[in-house]
Image 1: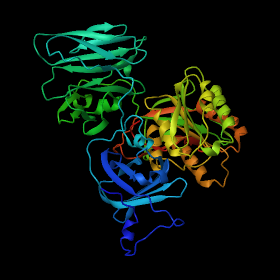
Image 2 (image 1 turned 90 degrees about the vertical axis):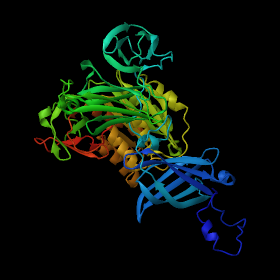
Image 3 (image 1 turned 90 degrees about the horizontal axis):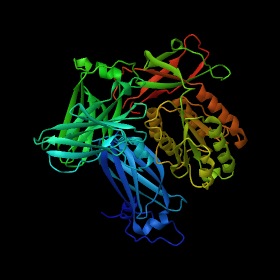
Image 4 (image 1 turned 180 degrees about the horizontal axis):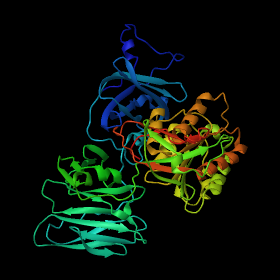
Length: 601
């Protein structure tokens, strides 16, 4: 394939040779565009879009370019996104898009950041229908993270691959266990064999002299006996079959009405292609690799008929497992309250002061206009706080950054109490984690002290990257987002960022520093982030007003209610579920919570 500028077909119509003068416009950047289906997405197929700049044009393009992609379905513009991305040393750029299946027309335009050069490409693309799900890899761009589903669990209990010593005799097995593990219990075909009270977590299993299928299960607990997780290993599985086991967490692992469920997979010869978990005909989760851990509401396990898991590898080998549930006359039965949807709710009076002391009976909750039954109710004041602090470090923040840095550290110090944790991110061209989850807020200023503000404002990317940090966390959560402008350079579009916010369900508190009323577009975006997630937007005129803003956020976080209920929605996982919360007896009160959600947090 050769590099084809967008306007080259026009030049072929001119019989007189065209020579660009030294003072005339530069020739367009020559581009090669390739697309490839990567997996099933939220609404269609996730496509990898590779843009290759011709070698002779890489220097003119510069280190970063603005890319605009426009997909036309028939005569309708189905998707248009604009991103500022970094150009690799070989002149390539890769983007991720979720497009409808079919034959469409794609237009790609690129422009150097200085505006002095640009180019384009236009051509047909075929978007295939794929069954395997898309899963982003490590250090993937933010739009890939936002498009992915059910990542493999981190810090899980996991068997190390056993040595290949045949199927009889003795075998030494070892388990990787999360931090805080005080004991690991090993079971063979359901019977307790041994309990280890210190690492290494090993077990020597006597398989005997007869080759037969054997299940080994490892359950990890902390010093207080609390369940931390488990894994299983299938030995001597039939040839050509993948060993699959469904592990339902014990009764003491149930929290907030959900039970942890692990799908253990062993014995695959090829690379695992996909692992799925279904209740009856409804898919609960799907993974590209293990550890495969999810949480299922006890109500679903009580009313379902069959819990089924299936694994497929790249060689076409399969394995499955089935657990009969209580709804079908099976043995499993849950006994604790149900939780499907967890709502952080803030209630304000006419003066915008938080209202406390309300009871569950005060609230009416509707999902898609249908009333739901409140299954759990409490306040978040006594729960540990997980706080993400995302700070704009674009070039426009240079003048205010020293004061912003001090204020950020002061905010965390004032707000955080024992057991609370904070993660700090910055965003300009890209959104980056500067300080991983820590209980030591004093390190914030030192981390920000090394930052020199420069570049654009990737606000949408910051939303996705920040919310990504909350995976696996529960309790009191908040994202505080400090910026002085609207998005200019994100890889992620607004719709995708908003969907990700609906999925993660973390209240967002945007702070638009110095954004006056004439900054209408930027203010509108920040207000919508707050409104969609149950947070509050602030627009201080200068850094001297940050302290009262931080005080206000702290007050709101300490005054939240936490309400959970069981959703009986018949919608599939790709359909939005709208939520309305009201207090019928006190209509003058203002209620803030998420406007709705997509399943999958």
